[in-house]
Image 1 (tube, rainbow, N blue to C red):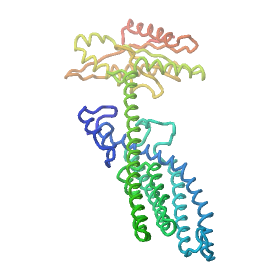
Image 2: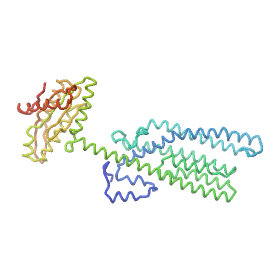
Image 3: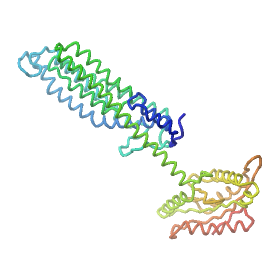
Image 4: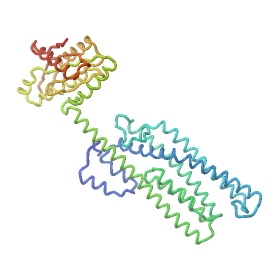
Length: 442
């Protein structure tokens, strides 16, 4: 069963997955199946699609231009020579017309294939669930990407289309290599094409084998049918077979290596996110801690200075909290803190900041507010806390809180310290007035 993102496997499970051969159909996928969940694995697969799309954006126009030149400079003149019946060493001279015509048709098929590829990669670039960002090494955080089903659907569509483009393009080159057996007997263009496809297209095993084996089958049948020279036939069979195996191995190695790179980057991102959560959030209540609140406060102060806005700092301190710990135990006190945190979280606006400052003390930053609004929010929070019932081990616990409010003066050298000092005095005045009160510092 997959573990939570960022978690690690037991040593024996990790060792077992690492021992898998990198060329097995699910080598890289199986290695990370226990450390990344299905959603994250789909993110990694789509990232590999993006690499292939970027590469095709660069190389397909070059291939299309190259084959267009060959069509105009080689194939068309060859047809003209064949039709005129001239003799000589030039291509087309002394050949039946159907031979250069077939070269031309195969070249047109390749041009059509590259054109379809160019259109597809430019269209799909704007429809990918995850935007292409060449500077992005680690996959985006889960909150910024769609669900697993959407990612898998996009990845499978890319896999099918890109594979078909690869099969069609290399298949047309296989046809050219077959026709070459009637001219020079050369297979270099076809074998290089298999090698280039294995490097450019990041297609997972065993799909990469299909993409390369189908054109190879076409080439093999044509080679046996048209090549009469036994020695050349044997050499071409051996060389092309070795190149096919080499291309499949290179394709599998590159895919699995890229998969591991992105999967490791995602694991590192998840681990860093967890560390950030631990360093910036209170472990008991899940609220932002003092460090996180300070960062948010400084950011808001800068905004207030630019936009001449207003903000209010509120201190909430639970009344007689020590008595709860002494009477009912610290687990009961923890339950009270969690419940009060939930009440405060549900009572503040989305633009406000909330943190557990320490012990039973909470801080709120009410931004873009005026004094009546700050008083209204704070009084509502006070009554919500008073009305809350905390259930712990069959007991019902109730608690109240005292509040102090002070306006933030962004012109001060240390606005947080200044506002906290005034709000703290107001909060203690609320406690001296009988607790469960709201007192302002203005």
